Structures are given as structure tokens and as C-alpha cells.
Length: 123
Image 1 (cartoon, rainbow, N blue to C red):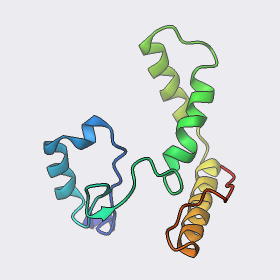
Image 2 (cartoon, rainbow, N blue to C red):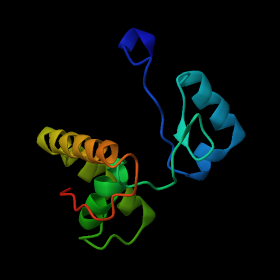
Image 3 (cartoon, rainbow, N blue to C red):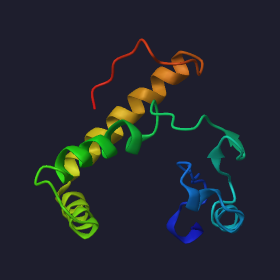
């Protein structure tokens, strides 16, 4: 991580079972020495916090809207659709998501970390 300039990077697990087992936690602590953001990590963070989590406020709903259009009948077909749709994501969309995430972070700071329920974000 250091040779890539990512020594300050944090990891935010999404609560998936794979992220909650002890062996994964030990690995993540080794790879991300600065810390983990989670309910039980180094930085307290609420579970499924869509205010600042790009996959929650954009990616999952975007993929769902694309992946199921052709009504896949098998798990493999769903996986293939997911891979295809991820490959189709354009750089501009990712840049827009980053800008939006920064806006969300700024709003969170301005509200002193309070809930952002009254704020409508474009995603």
C-alpha cells in the first residue's frame, strides 16, 4: 500500500459475512493499518450508511436497474450481467459519483455528523 501512496486509506466493510469473520478482520487490519470504519472498527461508523457510501447510494440500485432488464433465469446469467454492466460504467459516471460523495461529506461536516434526512442528493 505504501508504494502506491495508499498508506492513509481506510476500509469500510459493508457488513457482508465475509467481512465479519475473524480471519478477514485480521487480514484487513494488516492491510489497512490506519483503520477500519465500521460499528466495531477503529472509526465508529453506522452500518449501511448511504450518506457517504457510494455503493449504497448509487452502485447497487444502478446495477439492479440494468442487470434484471433481460430477466436472467440462472445465477450464472445474473453474474454475467453484473460483470457486463460493471465493465460498461464510463469514467464520467465515476467522476460524477466522486463529486457527489464529496458533496455528501461536506454536508455531513456542515451538519456536524448529524443525519442528512432532509437533504436530497442527486445520484
